[in-house]
Image 1 (cartoon, rainbow, N blue to C red):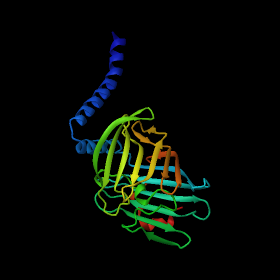
Image 2 (cartoon, rainbow, N blue to C red; image 1 turned 135 degrees about the horizontal axis):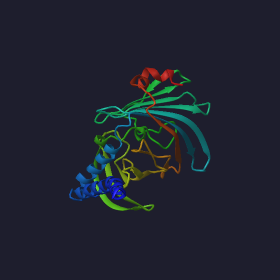
Image 3 (tube, rainbow, N blue to C red; image 1 turned 90 degrees about the vertical axis):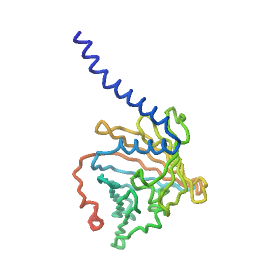
Image 4 (cartoon, rainbow, N blue to C red; image 1 turned 135 degrees about the vertical axis):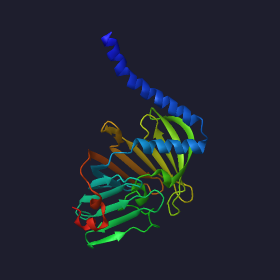
Length: 270
């Protein structure tokens, strides 16, 4: 009897989680395409709230049309902000020509993001114009607007279909940037139904032609809740160039403070 009760106690949380997932997806099915797309985006945001701050090591590999590669090493820090978008700081460690370059981003939900780039050769901080967020980030295939936290309010949404991607059940949703200076007319996102994280995103340019595809993989769970990828690969279909990002050594609750993400701290970034 005691063993039966123990098994029941261990099984109930799993059954409750499975039932919650089924109930949630039934609720999604009752919505129209726009409402369902929004609900999926809201659930993605909900599941990735509460981590407070994090750090990681990044390796960026840039490839040109001929396959020649350039490798860069970076450190990234992020800070979650209640009631607004996240703050992030990326510092380049190598190669020598970009060492000390630092990129600071303050993401906002409903107004243009604030972004700054510190250039050590000039010893000055350059503000990224709100009309230039579609420009390439330090020569990569990632645009400045790709590197901000994807707040729900930044887009309007539409559910397109459910399908299988690389053996995983996914939602396919379309989102349309609210920001008038976005370099994209729309993005199509494949969302893993099990963990509510993006696996692939297609970006369409201002002429509504396919511009880039981002594939994301190697997800691992941290703090028993938060999923983070180990690989991100952005391919530009119009230029033949690509940029691969590898993430490693994730750490949470590192003690980062708001002052660490102030633009005046950029020149002190090491």
